[in-house]
Image 1 (cartoon, rainbow, N blue to C red):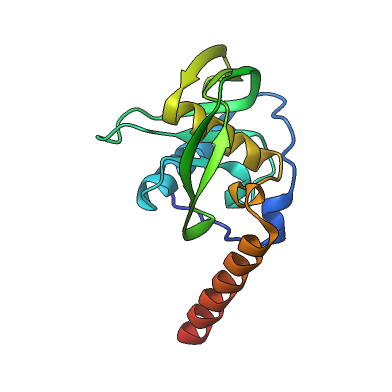
Image 2 (cartoon, rainbow, N blue to C red; image 1 turned 180 degrees about the vertical axis):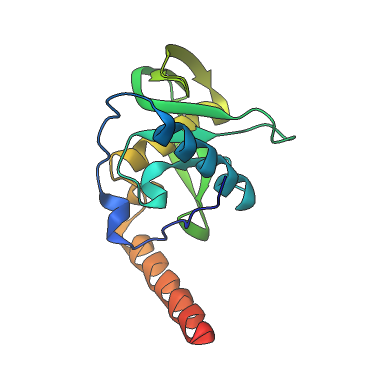
Length: 171
């Protein structure tokens, strides 16, 4: 396994719409394993392939305290949603920023597992939020898109400033 580089907003690759996986093979399994390692290292609970510059529909997550319940969703698709909840969200691609986002309270999702077997899952609470958040990434959308244009610009400015500072420090 190896750690991958997580893209940060406003990298335009975060806006790419991921293409479906035709068949699950060794490449997709390795990507999912590398994504899990990357997510754990970054102390996240979810990661979409687009966040690591892979334009395929793969998502990983682990909401357990012990970090021992990894989930892999290949070609995830929400087939039902109901209710509504507000939740403070953050994102590994928008480090250090959090905001309240309103999403469906319950979702049903259909996906393939790491072996390419189809499954369906009913989720609520944080799991439902995380599924919606990561599928948004696959569709080129980010949680900050739910914020006002002014807040998005402020976040973009601060992140560009941080990136410039890091680049100067390593030059």
